[in-house]
Image 1: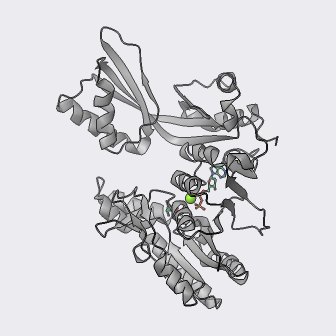
Image 2: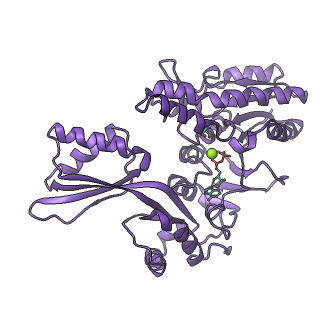
Image 3: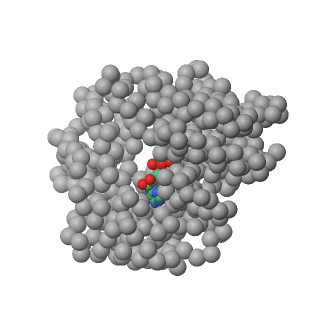
Length: 412
Ligand code: ADP
Ligand code: ASP
Ligand code: MG
């Protein structure tokens, strides 16, 4: 029988009532003749609570135990979903990551899925099970320890299952009815997009649009998974939501297709480092070893052989970045006068495939921000995106002003 993957995010399984509502939707697909793999998140807020408990217990925690704790939210919803389906006379059972098994790397708290052997679940489908409810976000390392896939990782679980089981479609049910031109909670004028290219979605996700985890989009692109984002709260037609697809399936799109933001960024400046060959490697090597996600980098003009080096990273990684730099300094690998952390900045980005062929997007973006009196601290560009770092207090204003400037409320 054809297989369908249906993923329900935290708000969609936040209460027993909502689990029932989601289960009904699964029941509809089962009655159409699909074998369904349901991927569930933890109840909304649960993972944050678990992360909080870990941090309170042990600030520089052992990541293996972090995963043991933080993965548990999904075990609860998987069991409850299976029970709910059974109550509706749908043959279902729950699977934790290790039972499938979802084989991952041992990079605890940020593991990558390496393989999902389909045999165990397929055998159960063969015996009459119609729904496999899989706990999202978790897997098992080669050492046999529980791993997690990074925040928002259930999306990635869903796409990986869709690829492994050659599913007809991977439906991501969430609390908005699709992918919008920007976060609809940040901008009233945000418009739902019917179809978005993998590459654009990948940029939007990696620049902060948390509607899909970045890795899930990467996998969907690589394995050609038919990926759809839709609301678990509204009645659905067959063409509901947003389809994430190949660029050539989209007839027309705006030059800029979306605005993304990442609220909690930090701008770190190493003051007065020696401007010599190898200095960048000496700085960014240790940062990378410490697992810091360095994003933007600028090296300032040098004077008398010394320069300032600025980089950005998520605010939550500032302490670890400082530690890595202090250690490199003590070891004599680098020398700097000071490390200044500005933790009150956010990143705002404009994304669009159309930028490849049309110039002037950067100029328009800078002019728009300047008209609002917003100072740009760092700029980064790639073929299909422009990002700026600005003071956090202007973030919302910047998103709305850019959305207006690029007329994203209007369809092409
Ligand atoms: P889930 O718990 O279902 O995984 P998430 O909270 O992870 O849901 O993701 C959905 C949220 O993503 C929405 O509530 C919305 O606020 C946010 N979001 C950010 N950018 C966008 C965008 N461009 N389009 C739609 N939603 C977005
Ligand atoms: N529950 C996990 C989180 O909140 C994974 C997910 O929901 O995708 O990050
Ligand atoms: Mg999510």
